[in-house]
Image (cartoon, rainbow, N blue to C red; front, top):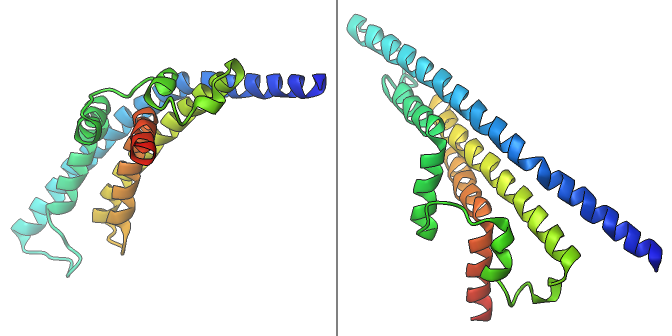
Length: 190
């Protein structure tokens, strides 16, 4: 029986160490989004210049020439990536009427009945650590959704807009998994 306790302590330590890696990784991802947003805005400006030159010279590349639409969407996505925290806040207000994600440590206040069987110290620390990881995965999914929406205009393919929208919405739900669990508890348990 002592061996199981040691194994559980090892698992708790592993999950907590994984959750401790989330804040620096999150800062790295946000910095990468800023840089990517600046690069995309430069590409959008180049796209506007190219579209203007083509329209002035009367050149069209065929039915796939979208003119200024591709750089316009690229510029919008670039602005969303540069101002990532405000973009996320806007989506959080739209879905949850809050402008910041709820801390993972508040999960037991938002879903007390659903998580009541797991209300001891080791389970609490594992759940909080796993929710931090889920919130980070939600951030990655949100960013991927924005990039898929940008790609859907540059290289149109069936379902690409739907994939991008799904990633954006799923990322917002995962970033605010604590309130989402509270909503699920209220829906299921009343």
